[in-house]
Length: 492
Image 1 (cartoon, one colour):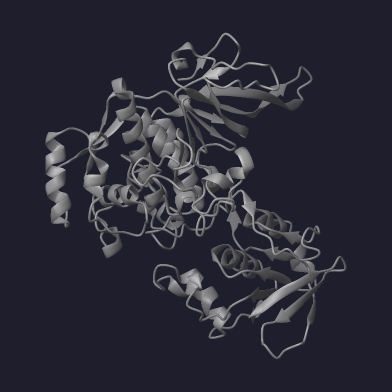
Image 2 (image 1 turned 90 degrees about the horizontal axis):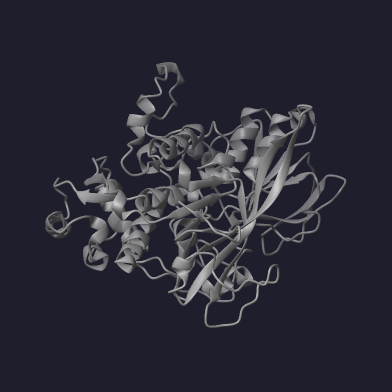
């Protein structure tokens, strides 16, 4: 728990920025919950032998992770993520749906004081998604430690006709409710501080004269930190609802400042939508996120408009927007840069039986299936969006000089997103694999030690989840094991 200091600042050991599944999992670890090998067999004989030795030497958290990770392969470039996934979901990538090899024990004497800061309620970016959509991953891959998703779901006593078409996948609403329930049931709520926005994270060295521009302070707020050569200062504001005597409600903004020894960035990568960089992109008729587009669809104005809407992009968000529009009988023009059968198209890679709705969109893109509300425009790029609701598109044929001018009702540009790390010096550019470039999940993740998740360029700063390339929940949780392992050893 954070302590209140005499100078009205807060003080704790660890601040976690982001309250999505990665941040929730780390809070569970830091609250004194430790995983032990339960003795069940594993198909990887080398790992199985190492696990047997672990059973004799304490928790997985207390082991040398580099040795346990040796020789493991999986769908993550971070070895601890592969290890933790191998223990929580044995043989998942081989089609197995096996029970976890971990037994969890609550050992409060090993807890590490921490605070989890989030702009929304627990669940992070999942709270902003369309609740009726299904998750891309299997429902069991969305779960957090020691609380099987299916067991939780069965307790909701849902009627059979309410269960989603694909039982192996959950709705976004279920996932959000599950994450909220996890925080409640695992007694983590005291660590979570919702409606908090971080605006500044900086390291203060005790052997350098660093003066705070606001109050002139140069010392950490907690005497327990004085033995360390530096501490972190996390600043921002929180939104607080206040009620007046006349029954009206007002949202107040209160500044906060927290001193800590370690900072963990777990914000995900969905803060800032990517843009095309074309004229007219900021007009009111343009949306850049599925959440904003959903709001437009719900107003039902597009349904009565004689002109079609335009969806730009060929990823999952673009596919979701197309499904949403077609289901609401809104005509859609779909512009995407590559051919529908291009090997890089993600919709082409998804198994048909598990993702029938995305398979349907891919068929529409290829033209092998028709829908009166959909028209594909493969190998096209947007040149300009005009305020009279005309869009200029150019085909990619080398010999073509033709420019298409289309009348549209709305434009949804859904071409990915990137994290907002504006609270870090230079927006965090110095801590990427390619310094001086913006942090981006696929091409420039944060550069971390593969076992502790500590930033290579900044001691005491850690990162996990999509920021280090783990875009799936089941792999993003591995950072909790690596960070807790490092912090536990440091505190001994």
